[in-house]
Length: 292
Ligand SMILES: O=C(O)CCC(=O)C(=O)O
Image 1 (spheres, rainbow, N blue to C red):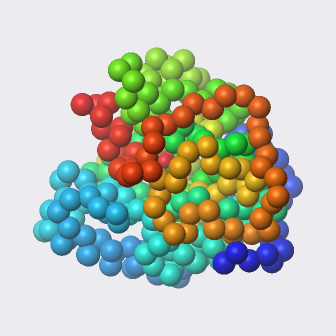
Image 2: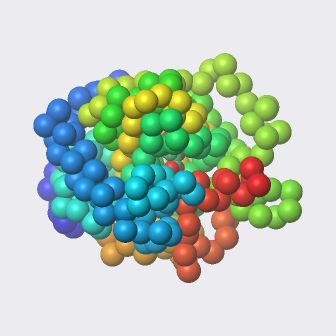
């Protein structure tokens, strides 16, 4: 780690331009069936471990319906901290080279998470922008979702609004000043969601989204899992405007390139989230505040 090897070029110029224009990109076949099979087994072993857990902790974000007999996880937190295979995905797989083509040459790891979205139980993720959670000094920040299962409309594939990364960062606070981790219904109602793209993709594919892009996903109403391993990265000269909330020793690791001597700034104001440095729960917990 902290490597300075020259990145391999996985993306065509057209794919890079498409990401810049639309704020998202889907790439199929980034990992093969054997690699995905091994990742699923590692994930299933962690789910087994969660049977002994009764409340959310540093590793598991439990659904309120979780029991020892029937484990229901919303999220595995910081998976790269917890297994060498997840760490390989973050630092050594083709993913960091793909990211370096979009943000590079110098890239830092921000955080990883594995959204479980279990069959018939996995909750919706409301409309939001990642920039509202972890603003940086410039906009070269993105998240890569690796599908451990085929993603379809009925199991809650992620949806994106192309071009919205060039628009405003909407407030993620409710009318009472509480940070609720999602946009307000009246802001959502003003979006042209007829232009939305549903990222229905086979397992082993990745989708990449710019951290200002508006995105969301529906509940899983199918009998199939929809596990999505997300890794977020920033250009090395994009400085976080908020303290680390991940509590991961890997936070800020240089993934590609060398540490820059300058911070780069994008003009304009950035809304700030609350200080999550003493403990961030999860987007599910925050968004459930709105439904309450
Ligand atoms: O799991 C999903 O469908 C969306 C995930 C997401 O946007 C997030 O966790 O920030």
